[in-house]
Length: 171
Image 1 (cartoon, rainbow, N blue to C red):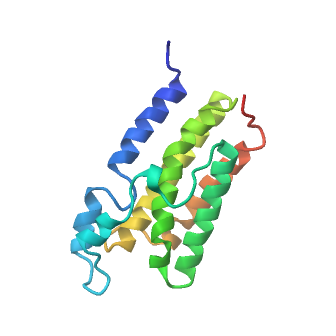
Image 2: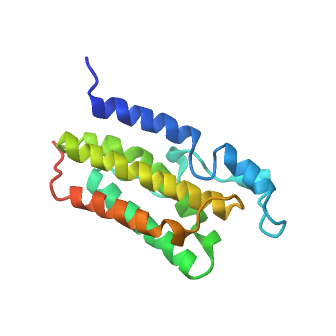
C-alpha cells in the first residue's frame, strides 16, 4: 500500500511536533533557567503537567471542522488572557493547541480536501504551531514572542483554516 503525500507530510509534521511541542522542547528548560525567580517554574512542576495528547484535559476533535473550531476557541482564551494581563492563565491552552495542531493535517487528509487546500492547511498549521510555541517560550521566560507580536499571523492562519471548512466533507 502506497502512502500519499498528505500522509507522509502529516507523519513528518507529527515527528517534528514531538520534538518541539510548545513548552516542552529543548528551549523550554534553558529559557526557564533565565526566568525571574518569582515566575520560574521548577522542573517538577513542569514535568507534572501532561505533554501527551492522550492525557490532555480536553477531548481532541474527530474532524477537521471540529479541530478548526477548537483551535479558534483556544486562541480566544489565549488572546484574552494576554489582553487581561494574566498570560500564565493561557499556559494550559498553549500546550493543548499544540496537540490539536499536530493532529490537524491528518484530519484534513481524512476529508475530501483537494491537495492545494491541504497544502494551505499544512502551511497555516505550521505557522500557528511556530507562533504559539514562541509565545509559550516567552511565557516561560525565554526570548520568544508576545501574543501581540504574533497576533496578525495567528489571525490570518486561522482565517485560512476557517476558509477550508465549508468545502470539507468526511467520506
